[in-house]
Structure formats: C-alpha cells, structure tokens
Length: 150
View 1 (spheres, rainbow, N blue to C red):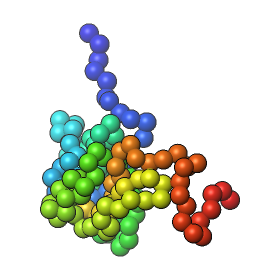
View 2 (view 1 turned 120 degrees about the horizontal axis):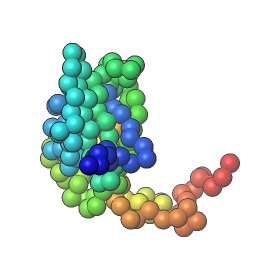
View 3 (view 1 turned 135 degrees about the vertical axis):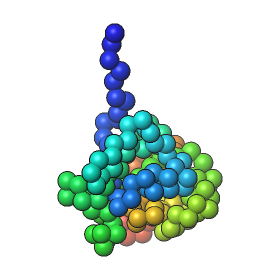
C-alpha cells in the first residue's frame, strides 16, 4: 500500500500569530481560506496550522517560535502576502463585512491588475489581486515618473 503524500506548492510562507486558532477562524471567515484541520498541531505553548487558498498553502505558527513575531509584538508589519482570487469586488465585500482593516479599496492598476489591500486581526498585510487580469510587462501603462529597468 502506497503512502499518502502531503500536497504542497513550491513555496509555503509562515506567518506568526499570537492566537493561531483565532487567526484560522478569521482567515476562513474574512478571506475564504480553508484550514487543513486534520493537520493542526498543538503542544506546550504552540499551535501550528496550515491554510489553503486556491492552489497555495500558508503556515500559521505561534508567535515566538523560530524567532518569528506577529506584527503586534514586533510593532510593525513584518511581511506581506499577495493572493490571487476570483471576483475581487465580491472578495473585498466579504473581507470588509468580516472586519478586515481595509488599507485600500479595489482599484485598477497600471499593470492591468485590480487589487485591494487589507490587514487581518493581528496586523498581517494582505494584497488581494483579481486572477487573470495582470498584463505582460511589455503592456504596462507606466505612470509619469516611472520607467522600466535599472
């Protein structure tokens, strides 16, 4: 009998949270992520969980492990994650209704994309972009003062 293999994309970012279970609930409710619930690990002072979004995977760990800190503890944004979704305006409405802190509302960008930016309950920065809209860099309509290359 063959072993079942862990499904994983090429890259899996890890985000630190003070309250991983609350983060799992919020990310599910606000952004439509799905937890690999059967894989959650808990131990003495730590929780480790995995969230699926589209064909991507994000790991959530208790703040402090392996030197990682949540934005609340660090006092600043520690990283950002870009996520491609279908129906950006619908996704935005869901996130806003669920209490995400909105940084910027959906907007069309010079590279053809449409995106919005939000923070979650612990201050992690998320950039959501409409799947299938971004143009090849040769098609970008650069704003004044911006040029391609070095």
